[in-house]
Image 1 (cartoon, rainbow, N blue to C red):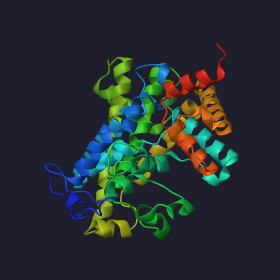
Image 2 (image 1 turned 30 degrees about the vertical axis):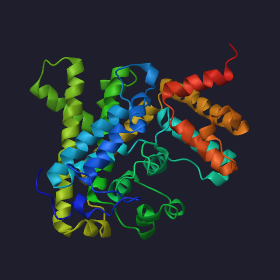
Image 3 (image 1 turned 90 degrees about the vertical axis):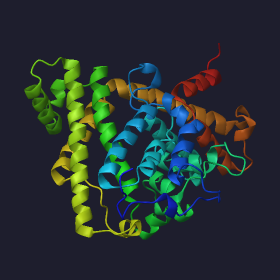
Length: 375
C-alpha cells in the first residue's frame, strides 16, 4: 500500500465501533468493515435494484450493485493518488447505496411521501439515512449485536447528508451536521466518485437503451469535446466503441481534475491530521470549469433521460406499487410477517418502510401482484 498522507484516516486510530470487539487478525479494522459489507444480505440485494432502468427491463443495464462497484473503483483510484486510506474508501463506496429502495429514486420519493402523508410522526424516508440504518440496526448476522458494527469512519462516510433534527438522534456520527464540520477526505472523495460514476454510466445506459442519442449529447460540452478527441485518434471507430471511448475519456478527465484540484486545496490549507480535515472547509472538489461541464451533463440527463416519457411511465407504475404496498400493510399489519409487526403505530410505519426498502424490484412487483391480483 502507498504511504498514507498525514491527513488520511488510519485504522489503528479509528474512533471505534458502537459495540467493542477484539481487534481483527490478519487484516485492519477498515478491511473488516469492507468485508462485512460485501458479505451482508443488503449488498447482495443491490444486484436486483434499479439504477435508472428497472431490473426486468434488460440484463445489460446497470444495477445498484454494479454502480457501487464502479464507484468503489473510481474512489480507490482517487484515494491512492491522494495518499488516503483505500480500504476505508472502498468500504464507504460499497455501502453508500445499501438503503436504496426498489425502483431507484422513484421508489425512494414515493416511500418518503407515504411516510410524511400517512404517518408524519415517523419522519419520512431518505435512502442515505436508511443505508446507515441497515449497517447499524437491520442486518442480522452477528450474535452479539444488530447491524454490522462498523467503524465510526465508515459510518461517517455513509451518512452524506442529514437534517439537523435527524442528526440530533444519531449520536457521534451526526455531530458534524450540528457543528458544521466536514467528514474525512475519504468520505469526501467517495461522494464525488459516486457523482462521476452515475453521470457517465447513465449516459452509457441511456444511449444503449435508445432513449438518448449521440446527436443529442453533442449539445453537451463535455461529451462533444471528448467525442471529437476520440474521433481524432480513431477516425474509423464503430459507433458502439465510440461511445465507450468517450465515456472512458470523460471519466479520466473528471478523475484527474478532481485529483489536481483537491491536491491544490490540500497544499493551500496544509492539513496535518484527519481532525484538521474535519475542522476545515471541503477539500475535495472539481475545478470551476469542469464542475460547470459536469453540471451541464447532469442537467441534460435530468431533462432527456430521467424525464423521458418511457422512464416516467415506468416510474409512475413503480410509485404506485410502493404506495399500494405501504397502504395495504399500514391498513392491515397482519399481511406482514411477524418480524415486521409492531405495537406502536410509528414503529409499525418504520418497520413497513424497512420491509419495502429492502425489497428488490422484482420482489416488490411479485408482492404487489400477490396482494392485489385475484387470479
